Amino acid sequence: MSTLKVTNIQATGETASRAVSGVAAAWIHYNGSSATIAESNNISSALDNGTGDYTAYISNDMTSSTYVAINFVAGGDDRRAAHSARDELVAGSWNLICRSAVVADSNALTDENKVMGAVFGDLA
Image 1 (tube, rainbow, N blue to C red):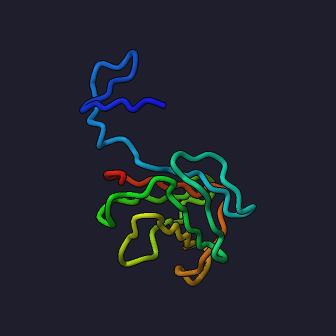
Image 2 (spheres, helix red, strand yellow):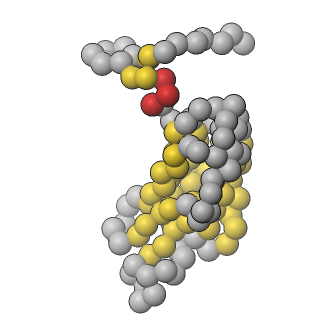
């Protein structure tokens, strides 16, 4: 396999180019109810740590723990949130935590069908 090195990338039909560093280094669409990966890129596996608590493992690690992780839940009741649990990210994985404000205790963890996350930064 060859390596293509570029500074900017532009899709066919697009008028603007994007910096390669602006493209997600890894992303996942995870079904927390069935503990399965629906779609992903640069993800080797995902672990169900318990209700509403998942870990996505990056195939090609990040260079450091200073990348950006963005998590969210899609569909259904809009009073749900996804976030990372760790105070500090690690190069090879990140947490996706799902909470529901529908339950009286807004900190209650909940399994969700559409849990998504992406990380941005440099790959090792």
